[in-house]
Length: 164
Image (cartoon, rainbow, N blue to C red; front, side, top):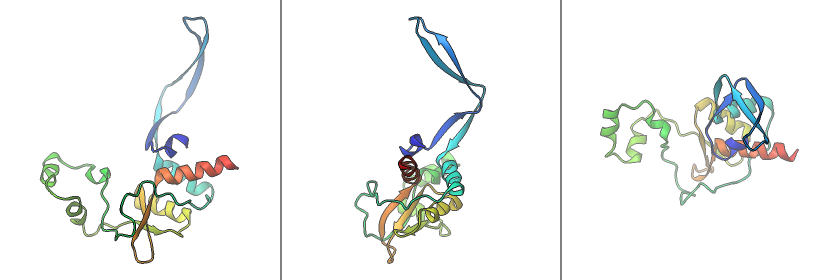
């Protein structure tokens, strides 16, 4: 969880790990880990697992990632995921468009948000069911207050588990 709480999105995890003691050239003993196979683990996998294991504590306010957007109307979301599976020719046609034009071309696209008072479990459920990595935090007038990322969620849960 520590690695994911620092913003790493994916990690290779050894399936069958084996540790051997080898003598180094200097005469010391080294531990060498090897595996016959690896599996990809993502932040979303961790959040899905944590959702079903325990109810985490409420998320603390942390708006370090929010720059000059507070109290403004949320109008769109743009991330690298939006470009996944994009053909080169299509991408070239989009290069001249603004981010707002790109994000509003799909009218069915939902902005995934929560309120500052929303329980962390509810925020986690939204992230998992909507397959997003960030949830916008808005006030009762739908004005931007902050953002909660999967890294934030994992960091808060990790910190609460260490405190136990």
